Image (cartoon, rainbow, N blue to C red; front, side, top):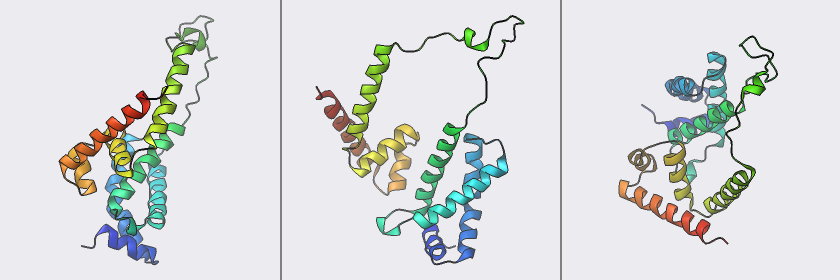
Length: 187
């Protein structure tokens, strides 16, 4: 069976059969993502995923030493996560509440949010973290994103990156230490 990297190479050359084979093999991934990031219409979700796969084929650079399957997997997850964030539920807070009174929905919302001071401090911390994150190596960034944001285990990250488990742990620990040093030494 031909591997994903070879199929991608053939697809980049214009082989439509390779594109179809890639999409066929990735269909189970698209279906599993449908359960994590549901759309209003399942067929639309699959079609958008197929379009994103074709874009990934064009964007993929094999000279960077990455595996196409790992690349497209991450790209699809980010794509669907961003789609889910952008969906807006059309709920008007000016609608009457369901308790037969004249109270509007907005009046029932309790303000348990952060104070203005807490919000400012959080925004400053986020900004500092973003700046510090930019100073990490590419491997460190990838490990932090996969482990803390994608919730992928260290063992799976090691397999995906083709490194030993201990190397991944050391890279993660160095990244955390570097983030702490950068953020804590800011004045």
